[in-house]
Amino acid sequence: SVGYAAGSALTTAHSTTFVGYNAGAAITTGVQNTGIGAYALDGISTQSYCTAVGVSALSVACGNHSTAVGHGAGMVMTGGQNTCMGSNSMVNVTSGNYNTALGTFTMLTNTNGSRNTALGYQALYSATGNDHNTAVGNRAMVTASNNGSCTAVGSQALEVATTGGHYNTAI
Image (cartoon, rainbow, N blue to C red):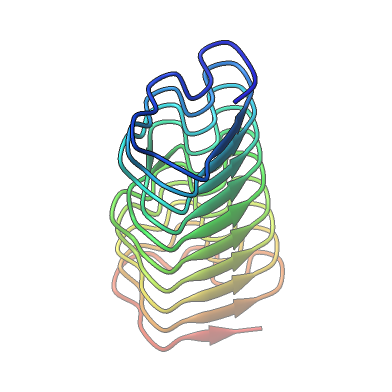
């Protein structure tokens, strides 16, 4: 560990790497975690197999086997096996699993949706309760709520798909 308080609570954890101010500071027993950047992985204690690169990436919570790259990416990600890349992507994934997001502000408030893919600025931005969706493009499905198995390709595709839409396709 390199950096002030980086990895400072480690007890039985092993195969971990922390670089940056407070990176991995609370981890005690989690294994094979990597935190690079100030506050990266600093709020988790027992989770394992998490990778965080960027200031405050996965800083509050992390579900096992999750990866976040970018400033604030996955900050409160309690769901597991999620992958996000981009500033503030997947900030509030509280119970969603198996999601992939690439782009700034993608899936920002995806509180409990699972098995979604978002690519592009603000794709699935305020997604809550969405499962099995694919959004590709600037603001694709930006206000989606409780939608399932939808595909949106292109700038602003299904932009206002609000409540309960299922099996919709927009190109």
